[in-house]
Length: 259
Image 1: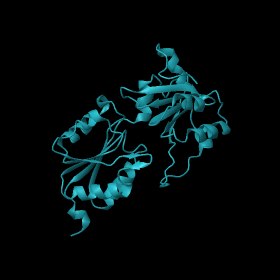
Image 2: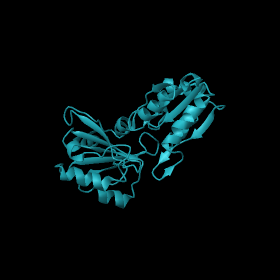
Image 3: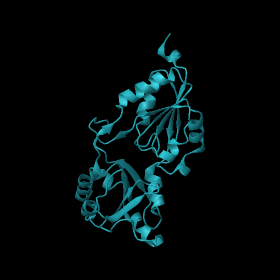
Image 4: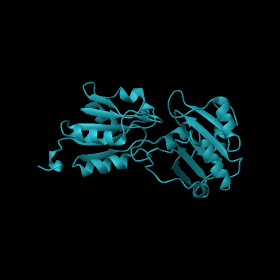
């Protein structure tokens, strides 16, 4: 019997969204409520974890910088093993599985192992967090284009280096995921590529959650502001003139100091 014919269950790559349980899709919630096994990431919020079937086996496979519960290869192997015995296996990933979530790699390995897979998209933090901070990624008066890029430098080197010079001139709004640790390099590279040091930037931490905070400033001063405010990950960065829109519609001051 081949491995392809042995798989009993199905693996669902489910996006949990950025944190607010109200942003969890109906399809994703329904799968959590009937799942036999749920393998979840570190950034999945507690209210969403509370949606999981109480009888389900819950396995933490989260990855935070320097703190990997399971290696990527171990996670995929676990999913394959669980699909041999369980009918519904949910791989619960923060945000969207295919937006810097390595969902494509997991899907590829599962299909190669003969496991049936279905993707359930989730709302990605790069869209939701700016919206909760009153920052539209596109606006006819500020920006007609947006680009999403990872700022994460992995020791596993699973992605090519980012061409920040090309990024700087590719869109009017730049959204950087996982870029706080490498923010000094990113800021320097963007300014060297021609962006003005007065270009607005917003750092948004724990987007859509009750403790969401924002640090608003400009490329030239944001590093000092990060140091002074002790701003830490997980956070995304929004770079471009759309950040100025926040001042138009937000009466309350930013959650953190201006840079």
